[in-house]
Length: 122
Image (cartoon, rainbow, N blue to C red; front, side, top):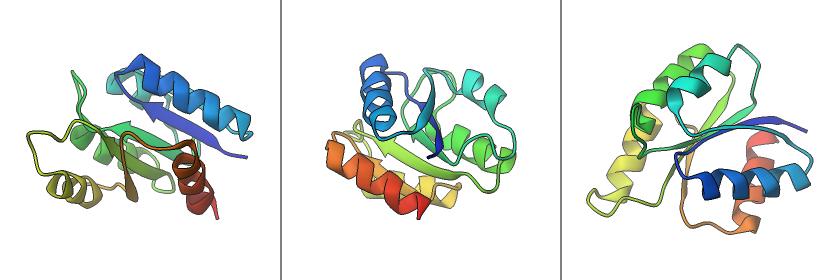
């Protein structure tokens, strides 16, 4: 199974994703802050990183390219449920331009999360 990083300032989201992915057999590291998360990234540390786009301190659009530079093999998933003031498609396109492999809109289902991880790992 995979080592997965979750970076989201919402504790409930992090813990929900952690529980779902651990049940599927994955090892999870999770942080509320991009500064803390980037300290743990070394080449090969994580296969997948889920990054929320709207966070204090370092937002996802700043964190994604930093993660991508730290580990070229890591698949990064940009997440957002807060695209109320910005067109979601434009925000997700920007995230992909900065290094995200794909996107995940919140709220998402358990099945969507598991299918996304399985697809990224295959």
